[in-house]
Structure formats: structure tokens, C-alpha cells
Amino acid sequence: VKLEAELRQALENQQWRLHYQPQVDRHGSFTGVEALLRWEHPERGLVSPAEFIPLLESTGLINDVGEWVLEEACQQLARWVYSPQLSQLTISVNISPLQFRETDFLTRVEQVFHHTQAPLAQLKLEVTESLFVEARDDARDKMLSLKALGVRFSLDDFGTGYSSLAYLAQLPLDQLKIDQSFVQQVLESKANAAIVESTIALAKSLNLDIIAEGVETEAQQAWLMAHGCHAFQGYLFGRPVSVSDIEAAVSAQS
Ligand code: G
Ligand code: G
Ligand code: MN
Ligand code: NA
Image 1 (cartoon, rainbow, N blue to C red):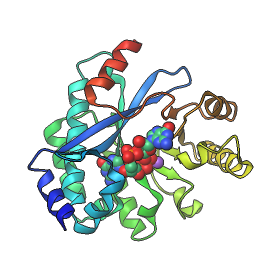
Image 2 (cartoon, helix red, strand yellow; image 1 turned 30 degrees about the vertical axis):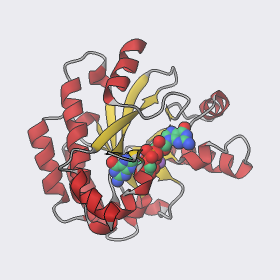
Image 3 (spheres, rainbow, N blue to C red; image 1 turned 135 degrees about the vertical axis):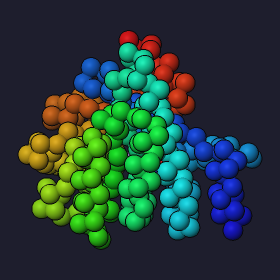
Image 4 (cartoon, helix red, strand yellow; image 1 turned 180 degrees about the vertical axis):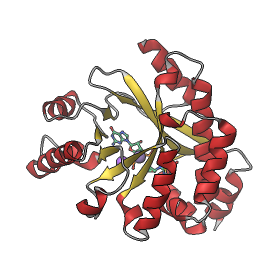
């Protein structure tokens, strides 16, 4: 109960932060970042979303917090427009299925787009397969409306859910994100290697971009490149950091 009360207060107490983790191409150049939510608690320090997202979802607070995340990311994209190096970056934002299914989701998102004036072609929304287990046609319709505004979609944690491949092919997706659980065992487990290989093949045949997350070693990256995956995210390239740290890392590279 205390945690829930504190979460309710966190928005007005300005305790939400966004951290950014780099995504790189085959040359190691930054192409984008994933925005990851953090709660800066006065006593507990930075709290990971794994500890509070379920509670945000069960209380419905995810709608307001998710809107804050999107607003913050869009403001960032709008600020980066003026910098030659930063204006090339995409920002990926995680959207909870509960937030996505709300009836006013589209209206709220469009308001954020309107008043931030963010370059929407550089915004990627990350959804998971769990979004499509129920009310999938509603989810697909909303995706189509957002696609019409230029937004792109990435399917996060791919391979961990239960989506039907036939239905996936009908969704307006742009990218598949190979889940880190497969990537981290790709050299040790033949089963995981087979899953990663078939995910890469699926992305190719559906004409989708592919990115591997959770890449921690050069050996994993080399294996992925040898098998046709050329975009990466993981501790090998950088941990989630503050906006000033990610900006410094991008400037240092160019
Ligand atoms: O950053 P970290 O590895 O601690 O994130 C843990 C989990 O929290 C991941 O599954 C990630 O997708 C999720 N997460 C991080 N930020 C957000 C956010 O802004 N919104 C939602 N819905 N989930 C997030
Ligand atoms: O579910 P989602 O893919 O959004 O979760 C992203 C989470 O994965 C973030 O919380 C981030 O901190 C974590 N993460 C990112 N890269 C790595 C990595 O290389 N290794 C591990 N163990 N976790 C990672
Ligand atoms: Mn994600
Ligand atoms: Na993921």
C-alpha cells in the first residue's frame, strides 16, 4: 500500500527519469536509443521498472506515467532536431499493452505529438506479442492510425510470446527485436541459436528490420553478424544512461 501511494505521488514530485541505451549499426555507430523508465526515489535511489511496472499496470497509473514517458521522449526528439549528430537518432519507447488498449490512447498520443512537434519518423513504439492475444484487431487499427502519422513499430522481446505468425504478417510492423534471453545463450545453446536464426529469416521474409538486444560480448556480436543481423543493443555498446551522458557519447563518436 505504501508503494502504491508513493507511485501515485511520483508524477507530481517529479521523480520519474528517462535513461537512454544506445543502439548501434554494424560499424558500432549510434543509430538510436531505447528510452527506459527509472524512478528516483528519495530513500531508495534509482528503482528499476521491473519492480513497479506491474503495480502501475494493476492500478491504471500506467496511463499517466506512460504519457509522461512519451512526452519526455518526444520533447527530446524535438530538441535534437537542431543538432547535426543528434538529429539522426531514433528513440524507441516501450508501450504497455494495457496503455495501448485504453480507449483514449490515440487521443492522448496525438496531443503529445501536436504540442511537442516531435519528428515522428524518428519515434519507434515498442510493443510486445502480449498486445495481440486479445482485441488484436483494435490494436492493429490503432497501429495503422499511428503509422499514418509516420511513427514506426518494433516488436519487443520477440520469441517469448505466443503470437501467431500468420497474424504477425498482417501487422504494420517495422522491426523485430530478438529477445535478450536468446542472444545471451546464442553461443552455448543450439536451441537458442536455432531460434535466433529463424527469427532473422522471418524478419527477412516479412521485410522487417531486425535488432538483437542484450548483446554483451564481441563473440555474440560476431555470431549475429555472420547470421545476418547488423543492428545491436546491449551492455557491449553501452548501458542505459542519463540524457547528458548519451549526448556526450554521441558527440565523442562523431
Ligand atoms: O531498464 P530495465 O531493464 O530495468 O527494464 C525492465 C523492464 O521494464 C523491461 O521489460 C522494459 O521493457 C520495461 N520498461 C522500461 N521502461 C518502460 C516504460 O517506459 N514503459 C513500459 N511500459 N515499460 C518499460
Ligand atoms: O523488455 P525490454 O527489452 O524493454 O528490456 C530492456 C531491458 O534490458 C532494460 O532494462 C535494460 O537495462 C536491459 N538490458 C539492456 N541491455 C542488456 C544487456 O546487455 N544485458 C542485460 N543483462 N540486460 C540488458
Ligand atoms: Mn524494450
Ligand atoms: Na526486450
